[in-house]
Image (tube, rainbow, N blue to C red):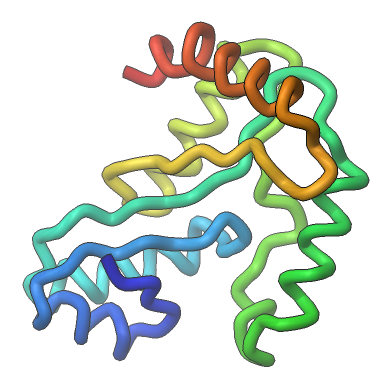
Length: 142
């Protein structure tokens, strides 16, 4: 997989025969542009969209703190393609599933990589989210 962040990198990934992996902050519109360039260049691999997801009240302070860390070390051009809040959060499993499906379609991704862990979120809270997403959300996405 290539973490392609530009059209040129997406085309190179296609030529190399590898798939694409997109980080959790990039907007669906930017991902779509890169996936389209990849496919037009003959890319046939998987295009995986990473998204933070949370069922219920999210650990907003911890997520915001981690995004600040990303901003500190990301290349200068990267934040230009980040959304204001790409975390998928809702109080119901059906709404989380609907939002994830919508963003996946808009991005042109054929797979999702869901993340719940950020520094400051305890093991028990992360495990509980993994169980809830797996038990309540994933069956609705499939």
